[in-house]
Image (cartoon, rainbow, N blue to C red):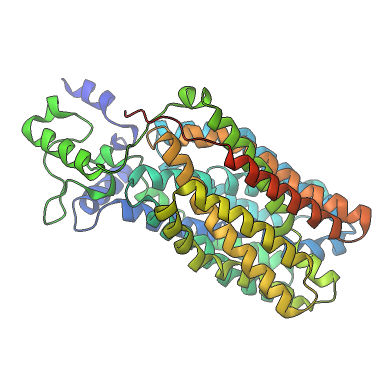
Length: 467
């Protein structure tokens, strides 16, 4: 194979065309040959990205909902419309982002999305009309939910791990949990002391400060670096065994056969199925999972986006209501590992069923909270369910359909997820405007969560197809 053919055969992210690319590739080559498996650097980069994206999460929107709507005279449905537009925008680009993740890797996609998200934060600090608010928020939320969404970032993490997938996703998810825990009181403090514009600007500067981390560290697959998932097949000093994992035993000789053999033995108890998007779309389980996810997100966003306004509406002090966002996120930290443990022991589907029931209980507690203690309890239970859901659902997707084409599969399913996400907050807002309170909205949400759990019970895992 001549030099030009080698360049064309190389994975997209290993082509060295720019000076800065050569510096980044040199850093990655050194880290991938070091003591630690490179997948954990992927986890660290995802962790940092998730910290900066929390400003577009539902609980944080609830911090800005009242001050912005009161200043401009918007109804809550009008203000929440920005969430719907941003979420539908994310749904429209989800399939493309999944294809980019599988084909070209996450490096430019994630770094570019962080830049756009940071610019959207800054733009929100300058808005003076509903249209400007919709445009800025739509850009930021679509970035947070599609290229920077948990679904896409967890799909990336899943590509680097098989046996340790649940624990790896748990650690990467801690970024969003830590960010929510720390940033909620910080954002509320900035709003109280300076105003909501300064709070949006703060998030923008935070996002732009870490843009180089994903550009430097994120890569597509362990095989692109001559590695195997979970760090299998590595020598005692941490270096990969000789022979490229993506070349196959015919090209790598005895070393390649030994590497593939180690990989197969490491998965002796795991039959990894790698379905393409076309193959997955022919499975009933794919469409049933999409429907279940849509119903669940429609339900949960109705709570997360309106939890703080509901608490203040029933007489709970605003400082306590804002603190429930921290309780909500703090509860996710231990729950991520608890639900991950249950997923390993009981299976992802059974753990997910428990998550849905916990969501329903948390919604009931939030709806009936009329004191600070009740508000904290409801936020904690609902937060523990959300922490588990964002881990377990991605374990289920990877277990059902494999890691090789997971980006495209999750990108396609994302449209269902985000349509549910977009409609949930808006439906709850309309029901509030109609009834003057959130009581009926919360009852609808509980019924929908129980319906999602019944739907999950009938879903069956596809028969394994080893790639």
